[in-house]
Every structure is written in structure tokens, then in C-alpha cells.
Length: 211
Ligand SMILES: O=C(O)CCC(=O)C(=O)O
Image: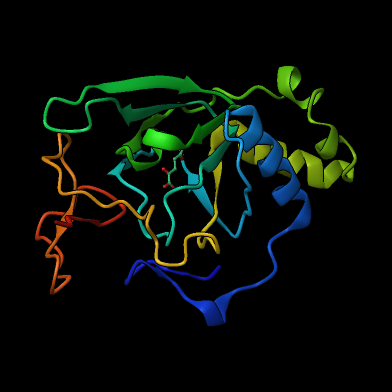
């Protein structure tokens, strides 16, 4: 709620309380994903994908610290999630994985800086019969509300990705490691000082280059 997409900054005055249950879940998922430090979820981005929709390759680098993981939760239709692999330069490869409802990707350590995106959302790949029985929190909802959610998820995908924005132990952003890379994927590159957008955008997010 406090992210300004145009200027790619978190705005202090727009902040609202982070949902407690989502924070608890993400702290434990970050730990499951191998992150051992303190994790304080402060911002969540919710992406709604219609059938066949994609998200262009980008790097999440607006946070003041890059030393904390992003916890990314998939709900509803399947998608193909792609991420840059080492050496994170012009010779990088791209690894793609099939993500299904309930899958979680934790991007921490080196992968926190990796380019990533969604190649495609697979229409009608979520089936209520199989998945609803394991969705305890949805079963508790009223029948009509629950069936609206299920109808939506059968045709669409929701991704919730959670980030820590600031690190009190790293107030100067030592881990806000922004590198000048030769990027292996077609992305938007805004001018580093004027912020001017390129004429042919190919992704949802703007990718800046830093030296
Ligand atoms: O939808 C996904 O799985 C990825 C979302 C993402 O990369 C983002 O919001 O920055």
C-alpha cells in the first residue's frame, strides 16, 4: 500500500499496519527457505494475473536493504516462473519452474538480486476438487464467499510477495547491492539520472542500472 510504482519508492506516509497473520506465515516460510536471520515483513505486493498473463523480467531493488529475502506465494492457476541463475552477468542462464497454488518461492541471498518474471499464467489449471479440501481458511468462509474465491482462482492467479524494506542493523543500506550488469533478458531500462522511460516498454516494472 505504501509503494509508489511511478517513482519506485516506499512512501512512509502511506504505510498501514502489516497483517499479523501474513507476517507470521512469511517469517516461518523464510526460515523454511533457509534464511536464518531476523525477518520483519513490512510490505506486500499482490499481483492479479488473468489467464495467459505474464510479468516481464525485473529485479526487485527498491527496498533499502537487499539482505532480507522476498517470500512469494502463489494462489490459483499455475504459472511458469523464471529466474536468472549464476553468474548473474551476460552469461547468466534462466531457470524456469512450474509454480502451482500453494507453492512458495523464497528469494534470498544471491537470488534476492536475480532478474525474475512470470513467462505465462496457465488458464484453468487450478481445480477446486483437489485443492479446496486442503485450504482450511477458505473452508471456514461462508459458502457463497468461498465459491466466489474458488471461481476466481480457477481462472486467474494471485501472487502475494512480501518484503522487508528497511533494516535497522543496516541503516545505510550496505546490502542494497545494485550492480551494473549486462542484462541477459529484454527489460525496461530507465535513464539512471532523469528516470525517463524507454519508448518500448516490455515489462511491468522499470529496471534501473546503477554503477
Ligand atoms: O507472480 C510472481 O510469481 C512474481 C511476482 C514478482 O516478481 C513481483 O511482484 O515482483
